[in-house]
Length: 323
Image (cartoon, rainbow, N blue to C red; front, side, top):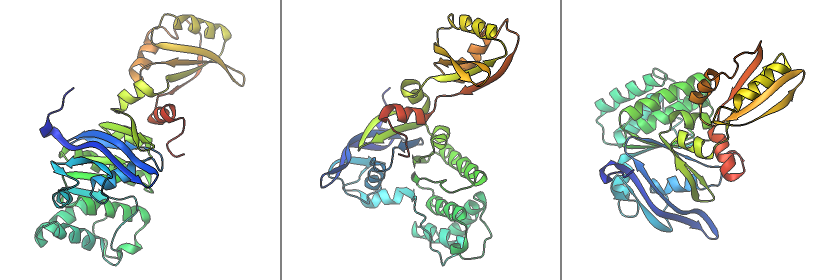
């Protein structure tokens, strides 16, 4: 599907960055649309941080170029910096300032009046649950410092936001709060570039994903497209009281086209059948509706394991994302 030039936030063209013999980024080309959340996933040392540092004009490429909202990273650095916000993995705050002072300082640096800065700061700190804190930010917990860091990157409402592990170290409640705020940003047409090791986070938030390994893009697409093309099959594990029931289900499976294979597995005293099939939850419902467990006495237990982005990366590279 063709994409109009006006709808592109970032266009990366054969971008390379070499450090002597190390090809950290080796010919990356991508188009990232305005208003989408695009995740860049890869193991440590894959090149994703180097790629983002070039897009944010911190590093100069060895070769190639990228346009960020129409400005070249080679010649338009000043204009690019005005349009981007960065929330780094390493927490970067002014520890001797209070939360409000940290955020207001960033807002004023980006051209807001003091009144505008105070209003924006109050709104965003309330959204992140850290408004009203009067102590120095160095006394905050790690999770609260990370939320403050994210607020600082968002207060001036950048056109493009780069997020590097935005929920690392957060408790589940704070993590969900940040997710909800990120979804709200998408609704406001802010383009978001996310780097994360959290596959659930990437799957839940991303419009599209690129997997990078050894400096090259090895796959890209929506989470669903990637799981369908590169993932493992979904698996349904069914345990029965009687061997006769297991045999009935095996016979039923022969007539279901999206079932890939099935096998009997040992689960202590249970008579268990492991069924691999293509498609997601929709096909699981079809599987159960097409007579899979009709005419049997009793199912003792049933477990469903869905294809995941971790499976995709493992199948593409032979290693897990955190290796």
